Amino acid sequence: MTLNEDSEWLINADGVESIQAVVCDLNGILRGKRVPVGQAEKVLKGGIRMPLSIVGVDVWGEDIVGSSHVFASGDMDGICAATGRGALPVSWTLKPSAVVPLWLFKENGDPFLADPRQALAHIVRQYHELGLRPVVASEMEFYLIDAEPDHAEPPISPYTGKRLDSDAILSIDELDDFGQFFSDVYAECERQNVPADSAVAENGIGQFEINLIHSDDPLKAADDALFFKRIIKGVARKHGFAATFMAKPYGMRSGSGMHMHFSVIDEDGNNVFDDGTPEGSAIMKHAVAGLTRGMAESTLLFAPHYNSYRRLRPDTHAPTSISWGYENRTAAIRIPGGNNKARRIEHRVAGADANPYLVMAGILGAALVGIRNKWEPPAPVSGRAYLSQLPRIPSEWGSAVTAFENGSIVSEIFDQDLRSMLIACKRQEIAGFAEQVTDFEFSAYLEIV
Image 1: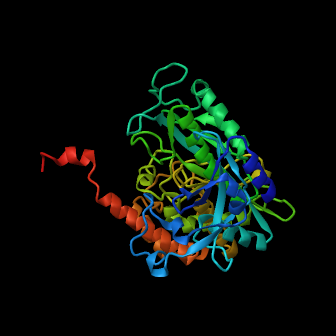
Image 2 (image 1 turned 30 degrees about the vertical axis):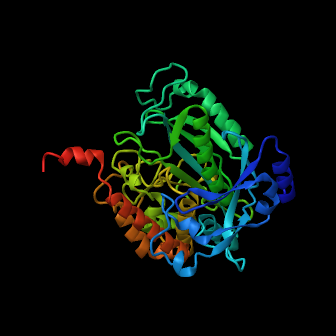
Image 3 (image 1 turned 60 degrees about the vertical axis):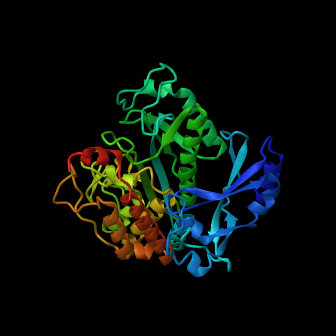
């Protein structure tokens, strides 16, 4: 739709009385304003303003204490422009509504590069300057859980009336049990132009995966991933469940990942990762080298939360070593088999809790650094990649923050504003978790020490 068509649709849509004008923050959380539908044109034509600092608040929505982007700078506003995605209809709210995705620009019209979507756009522009286009797809894992308890508990099957109690990888019966939920998910994805592909039951109780179809527009692909997560959560509420994209909602069960697949095509549409062999081209290997060299300092993007690091454990189908290999799901970077023309890289580090814009920017950015410098990767691993002699992905949140802060590759990829805001945000969150005493900790030590 054009802006005028979007505005007209919003005003005339049956029952729609409000618009959620939103930007995506560094944690992948949508923040913004509820606006009467009569102001649709204002929203769509850049008439909404929000503080630039809004993208850098912590996971609880609190300002970062001492941030130069808040009080020291006067907490200045930015211009919120429509991303071009248009108005997305929402049917699971009490009354029909619509979401209009926005992104931030400075007062002078320059992109605000601490906005995660702008950070990804900055990387994509650099590919385009070289006559290249990344082609990106994501695989999204999530859990359906019971909405009533205040802890993760498997849902009750709408078909059997019994609580799920076992892992059911690739179970068709479990997909059938939740068939109406999936039917509504696919309907909402179609309404919001999110290209959902196949669904499977995954390893965990109530865990599922839906793949999103590849796109040669990484911004749209990241949009798709972000709004897919919102669709899953909204439709789950409609059916009386809850849905979570936590990396590890159950300590002893499979975590949820967000695997990213990508290739790169030239101006003639040729896949530059394909050289006619199963091994892939020199350019693909340069990209792999950039990804392996940049992995430790990029881990904060792939595992941004306290809970994220529970997933990155040996023998859990999540990677722990900085490694790559052909058809090897124990490695952090997998080169899938199949037709040479579809040669691509699968990046397996990110959890489902990560921000899709930052994940894609980190992956595409590190690959581009490797391509430009013509770096050579280490030898590919075969067999089990959970080996002690391989370099390790940071396994602790604070270490990942420090690696990101000191990283030379991420400093090439991301603007200083984004890096300083993300570091300050995560350090404030770390401090928040450090102040909490858990029930388990209390019961373990109460009468013992």
